[in-house]
Image (cartoon, rainbow, N blue to C red; front, top):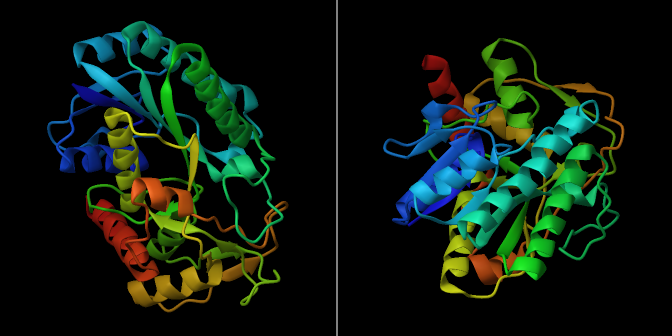
Length: 322
């Protein structure tokens, strides 16, 4: 019996697969490799190349590999781009999730851990976001993730699906040099790419009402995030109660300026980032409470900011060598 990880060849997904393996839980990965990389997968991990829009493929994978539960990470994850590509976003994230749930029901698979997002909150007007903070998504991506949560809840009521959704904040770092964040939109890869190419990194806005004038965000290490998925899966396997959603946040933000200073320290490259204008809609601060996840999923920040930067930089440099 195994757990199916959709999107398991991605940056986060590959860490989740490794976390399951470390706990002695078998996995099978379904990924269309549109953004994932087969080389991110650990040796011996069963892999099925295909899209979550293919219900027959999903049913076959579940039956052939004796799947008992699903970690659903596959989807289109770029919030900014989703504004220009709403139909693609909804097809991947809503139709894809609906197709997956249908395949699960047909295959008798009744438990799922869903990859949700802080984007469901939009621009919160509170200093500390909790699971009860009103949801006001501001992009098709954020809307699609909230709809995904609704789909799980509805299927739970209708068919007894056991489920929980994990709302990610800013995921960084690496648990192994074999996996790095290749996103063309995330802060760490953008900064590292600039430094490796001899360019000065650029940040957006230096006049926010924060201690150093830059945005404050909630950064969490990808390995901690992956462990939370295993903890949630274990509780579902044991029939133990779970909340429908959990914030995976630190409760204590870090500014973009602090990130830049730590990057300079870790890389040994002395630089002052270029400061561009604010991006429209960027709030000064988004920080989340992780109290519920700490109670139920053994969630805690096991990595310092320095360790987040050091591990991400090490993995990115290893990728450059390859």
